Image (tube, rainbow, N blue to C red; front, side):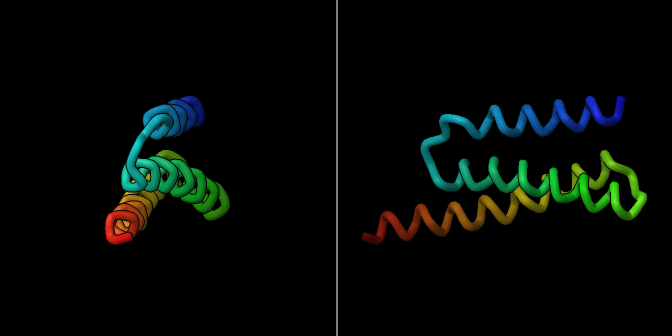
Length: 79
């Protein structure tokens, strides 16, 4: 059941990032997906809770991806 919930969350994050027009939104969506997968992997290897690992990774990935995407948006406006 936990695996299904994690897959459902990651699928929802991926589907929301498709069709985004700004780098900020794309970066946040892709960062959340990559972070969630990374957090899930780390939790599985370390024997932690998979759901919490995926959730923490997705949050951190979305934050970093949004920051990087926002910087790219500002850089494109300057040129």
